[in-house]
Image (tube, rainbow, N blue to C red; front, top):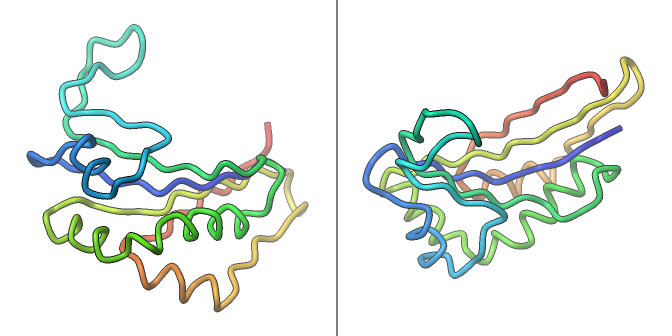
Length: 131
């Protein structure tokens, strides 16, 4: 089983990833600005900014553990996160669960769901094979 979770803030308007970092006073795992080149050899450029905070837990951890790790970092910034979404940023929680068929279940308990609902962003689950 390989898992992970990332909180993402995107902006297709004038908002920048650098502005998010300053506003939250929190360093992202990765950040990209509108106009940055996409990929190493691609001539395409990003249409908007992207600010990412990824769980630092091992990829063998449960998805819920990754989400709890992110929530521990972001809950103190709840008001600022809501302000960013009010300014036009789009938030989501992107989770990966790569596993062999019928090998593993992901449990999202009520406490975790309650914590997620207190912050902006939809929950996205990418469930795939581990190959």
